Image (tube, rainbow, N blue to C red; front, side):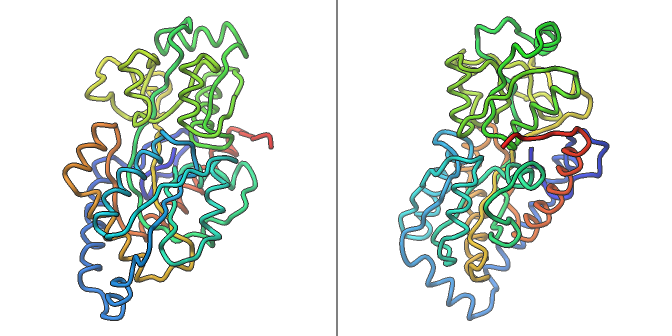
Amino acid sequence: MSRAPRPPHHSGDIEPMKTQDSTRRHFSLLAAAALAAAAFGLPGAALAQAKFPSKPVTIVVPYTAGGASDVQARLIGQKLSQLWGQPVVVDNKPGASASIGMQFVAQAAPDGHTLVISDLGTLTIAPSVRKVPYELDKDFAPLTILTYSPYLLTAHPSTPYNTLNELVAYAKANPNKINYGTSGLGTNPHLAGRLFASRLGLQWTDVPSKGGSQTIQDVMQGVVDLQFNSVFSTASHVKAAKLKALAVSSAKRLPDMPNLPTVGEVIPGFVAGGYQGMFAPAATPPEVVRRINADLVQVLAMPDVKARLVELGAEPMAGSPEAMRTFLREDRERWAGVVKQYNIKVEQ
């Protein structure tokens, strides 16, 4: 449930970070600045950039294949490979709520040839709910926020509720009868479900998996009943009638699903979603960070990439490494407040 930079101070609800329009304007300016910096950098920096990449680049995805991070890694990686003249390989390293893949990249050579795409909320929530084998501030160099995608609240087609209100009524009448699938303990979807249940006084059982795509499969197969997961990853399954959608977590209803209510229509102020971002190891040279950032901004501005992301339910959000760093700090502080207010705990 990560947010765009500078989220408002809040009273505990999950709220949008300013408005999406102001966020878009903010990132547009930052994207232009990133391109300008790349074009007019120091001669020494330009020389160093010319040497990158000197070999194939690996983008680590700390989740199973098929989720939002994985799909974006493959789409963006293909374009980067064309820009760089080097293969860009996507390597899925799921497990431990993204910690395995994140730690792998934290320990990789800091030369820009090993990168990671992750759901940012997973990383900003983690310090408040569990121990992780890395420090976000010290072990990684932020590159850019990539996209935002709201969540769909979806259920297995056989479940006895077909609307958001029916779900709430059923859950209240049948405490602990619903198995709620999550992409891992302490992840965005996990806390979205916890907060949803807490606000409405519901009780259900959290069932973690190795990643968002695995959770989708678990719901479609009836292993679990319910999930919050990105529009990016679930909309196609809803259209194929393999999942049924009960609500969307954005501030407004989706244009292509106008009859689907927002969660905020039942829980005022509830806005959630996933922000994907890319990192390099912490000691990556600044000129390489600038080069990768500028190329990511360029890729996300390509008409075919933008069209594909929007088609999948994701909004391109490319900006500067500095904006991403600010977002990470503020979102971590925000989530610490939510975890404390609602006494959200994660069993290790």
